[in-house]
Image (cartoon, rainbow, N blue to C red; front, side, top):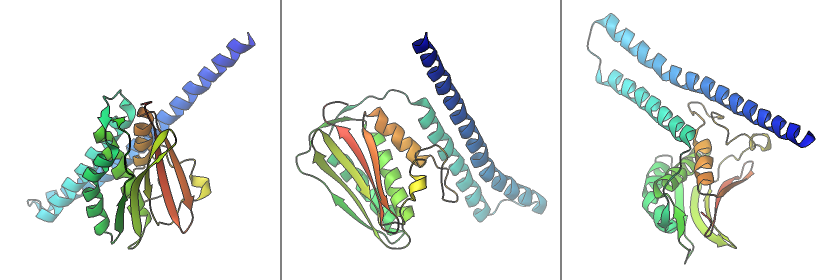
Length: 234
């Protein structure tokens, strides 16, 4: 009886945690969608008072805010669905080579140097290429945002016993120890204007590939995110 009660207790705790997560997500969604909608509403009301057509500048701001809503909703769907993905044998280095120019372009705008270091003779991995690209972009953009107007971002691969490691290393401000246990929670963010979904989505992608993600960070020095893909076990 004690074992059954313990399992029931754990099940209730799991449901309670899930409800709490849904509650936090609902509150986060409400705030994140309300902010751009308020901006859009304000601009439209201003144009109504002026009885004039929207200027190009106003239209640009409206479309930008609508795009933010679209991105937010897309990310929430991606996080919530957690659906099975179709993977196939892929060369991780080739995926990184394809997405690297996009990372370079984003880094140059912030005055950030980039470097790509790829290990030789990596084994093929069962991957969903588009999801891996999405994850790399999220980790790279986080690294760029963690730096000011200088610094270096390094993306690379290495092979360790039984796994292939993809890493993204920045020279940013680092993550305080008290925050490291929360950075993968949905809607957790210390940056203004950031919905805090990127790392939650990245973790979701890693788990769908039966991998693990690790974070090493030193305040004032930078952070490195390591994604470990088990060889032959995806």
